[in-house]
Image (cartoon, rainbow, N blue to C red; front, top):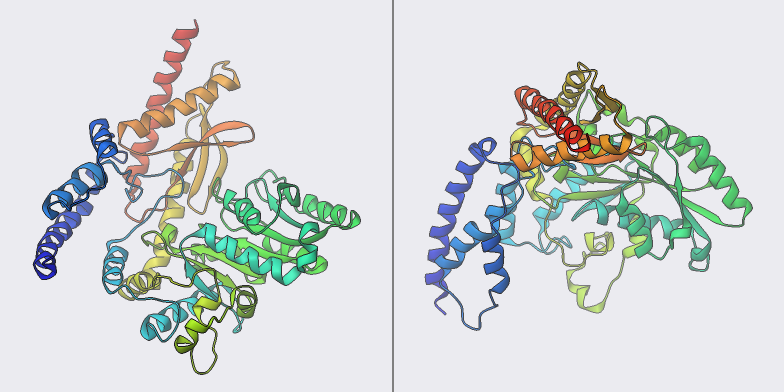
Length: 478
C-alpha cells in the first residue's frame, strides 16, 4: 500500500471538501431543512457489501457526499426549530477537524499535557459560572445522557451503601428528560424506584408533591437519595424551583442533580443567567456545549460540587497505567468517569471561545430568547391560536384552536398536520409535543443566524397552513 501516495490524494480531496463545505454553510438558509430522501440511494447502500478489496478513494469520497451526507437532516439550519437543534459553528468544526487529525488520548496529563490543561481551565470556567466552590470539578463527555449517568453514579455511591441499593429512591418530574430514567436503570434501579413528581401549571416540579413523596417513602422504610431537577426542560424550557429543591435535599440528605444539558448555557448570558437562580446549590450539573454554545456533537460536560465524589465512583489504577500516572498522584480524567480512552472534546470549545469571546456567546443566548418571545407575540395576535407554554430560554409552545366547534382530537390532528406540512416543505422544521393532554407546536429558536424575518415567515406559514388544514378536514367530515 502506497500510504504517501494515498495521503497526497486525501489532501487534495480534503481541500475540495473544506472549500465546498464553507460554500454550503454560507448558503445554508437557501437549502431545505429536511432534504428529501433518495430511496434509490438508500437501496444501493443497503445492497452494498463490505469489500474484500478496496475501492478507489475518489469513488468512495464522491459516494459519501452524494449518497450519505446529502440525505442528512440539517439540525444546524437557522430554521430548524424542532427538538433542541444543533447551533454548530464552523469554528467548532475547525477545532473538531484539527483535534481529530492529531487524535490526542485525553485521559491523563502525560498523554497530552496541553489538552489536559485546556480541559481543566474550561471545567474551572464552567464551575465558576455555576457558582461551584474551588474543590469542584468534572470532565467532558459525549452528551447529556452520559453526563447524567455519570453524576447519578456519584450520587448513588455518595448516598447509598451497596446493601441499600434495593431501597433507594430517586425523584424526577413528569418533564424530566428520558435519559435520566435510562441512566438510573443502567446503574441498577428499577422503575418502581423512580418517583415521577407532577409538574405545576408552569411545567415546573411541584414542590409540595415532592416533599410529600419523600416523606411517604421514608415512612415506608425506603431511602430517598437523589432529586433530579431541570434547568431548561426539553419540552418547555422550564427551570425547576432550584432553591426550594435544594432546601428539601439538604433537609432530607438527598443528592441534588440538575439536568442543565440545554439550559445551563444561559449562565454565559448576563441577562438570562438570573433564570437559573439556585443552580449553585446543586451537587452536580450536566451541560451540553453542543446545544447552545455552537459546538459539534458531542461536547458535553458533567460538573460536581466535589471532584472527589467522581473519583470515589470511577478511580481505578491497573498495573498497565502505572507509567502514565502523574508522579504527584493527582486525579486524572480517567479517574472521573467511565471512559479510559477518551478524545479531547474540549479543544473545539476552547478554539470557539478564544476567537469569539464570552460576551459574543452571551449575546447569542439573549438572541435566542428574544426570538422565542417574538414568536409568542406573533401567535398572540391571532385569536385562532393559543400559547400553551410561554417563551422560556428560547422555547415556546402554542396551538391552533380555530373558531369552530372542533373536538380536541380534530385539533390534535390539525396541529400534527401543520407540523408535518412545514417540515415536509423544507422551509422550516417544527415538531409537536404533548402538554396538558394536547398536541402543541413547539419552536426552539436558539440558532444565532436565525433572523426576525425567519420567525415572521415561519409563523405566517403556520397560520396559512392551519386555515387550509381545517378547511380540508371540515370538507372530509361534512
